[in-house]
Length: 115
Image (tube, rainbow, N blue to C red):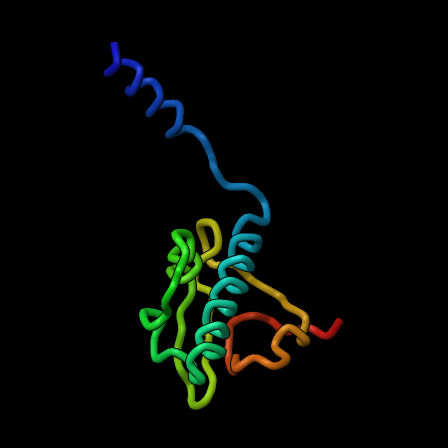
């Protein structure tokens, strides 16, 4: 009986589309902002940006989600941060240029717009 339930459930789930419009952008934005926050917190605590994301300490259980969705490169006295994944695909993100103010963020695949 349990095997039949699992089989039926699997067939039903396989036919579902779990995507929704704007999901990549919403999750991509969360991934980017959370990663920036963790990177900048490391700089505040240690005086330098991390060599890699593996150097970040005191992470919460969910922080691995944001960090696995971005690509980080230390660049001189700052860093580059690229969003690689949103919900399921690669998002196209736009942020106000003021977001970068005071950050060590030098390069990104985020589009910067003036608002």
